[in-house]
Length: 64
Image 1 (cartoon, rainbow, N blue to C red):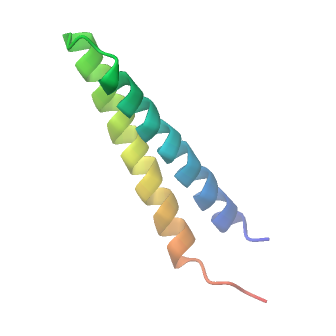
Image 2 (cartoon, one colour; image 1 turned 60 degrees about the vertical axis):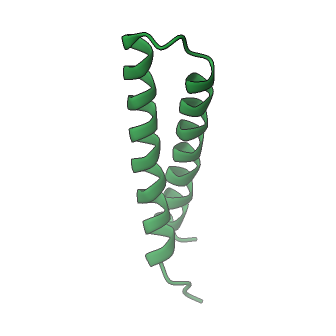
């Protein structure tokens, strides 16, 4: 088992959950400044984790 591949999958899953949570917050907010900051933080972190995880999974080669 490749540790980097497992870590990449874990980062991807955390990123997906972050993006989904940001979307839920976006749908349920009243538009206050605190809400916008929270949505931005979760959206940016989710995007960073998702792209980092996908990059790790994509660059790892299967070794037999």
